Length: 304
Image (cartoon, rainbow, N blue to C red; front, side):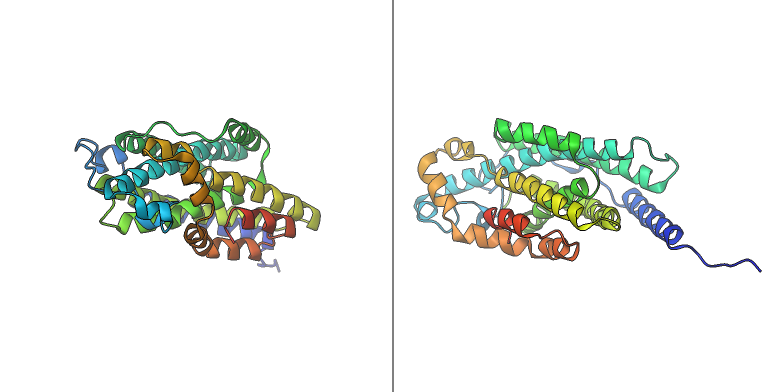
C-alpha cells in the first residue's frame, strides 16, 4: 500500500506557495496608484509639517526650543524629504537584489510572480517618494559617496538571508515612523497619503522578507550565520545613519554645525529609534542574527 506521508520539503514548498498566493491576492485587492491617490496639484501649504515633530532629529533639544514654528515645520519637511530620498536609494538596491535572486527560478511559481509584484510596487513607491520630496521643496538628497559605493557592492554581492534581512530592516524602520506620520493631522495631507500607501503595501513586503529570511537560514551553519549577521548589521547601520542628510539643516536655514552636534546627542531621538525597532530586534534574535559584532553596530546606530 502506498504511503500518503508528505515529505517535509514538499510541505515547506506548499506552504511557501500558499503564502505567495495570499500576498498576490492581497495585492490585487488592496493596492494604490500614487498618480491618482496623492493630491499632487494642490500647492504646498507651509502651515503643515513634513513629519511628526517628535520624529525630528532636533526635537527636545535646546536648539529645537529656540526655533520658530515656521523653522520647525521647514526642518521636518526637509527631514521627511531626506528619508524619502534614502528610501528611493535603498528601494533601487532592493529591486536589483530581488531580480537577481529570481533570475533563474520557475516563472510559474507564485513566489516568482510575487517577487515581480513587489518590484512593481517598489518602482511606484520610488516615483511617489521622488515627487513627494520635490513637492516638499527639497533637493535630491543622497547618502555620502562612500555609502553609495558600498550600496553598489551590497546589491551585487548580497544574497539569501543577508539580502532579505537587510530589506526587512530598511522596511521596518520606515514602517514605524510612517505609521506615526500618516495619523498625524499636523503633517501635510499629501505626505500622510504617501505614508499610508507605503505602510499598507510594505506590510506585504515585510511578510515576504521575514519568510524568505527564515527559509534561507533553515540549513545555515554557525559560521554562515555569524558572517551574514554582521553583513546585515553593516547594511542596517548605513541605511539608518543615512536617513537624515546633514544638508537638511542648511536647507532649513539652520546652523549645520550646531544642529549636527545637538542631533548627535539627542537622547529623545535615540530612544525613539530603539523603541520603534523592538519588534525587529526580536525577529533578528529569533533568527539568531544578533551576534556580538552585530549588536555593537545596532547599538551604535541606536537601534537597540
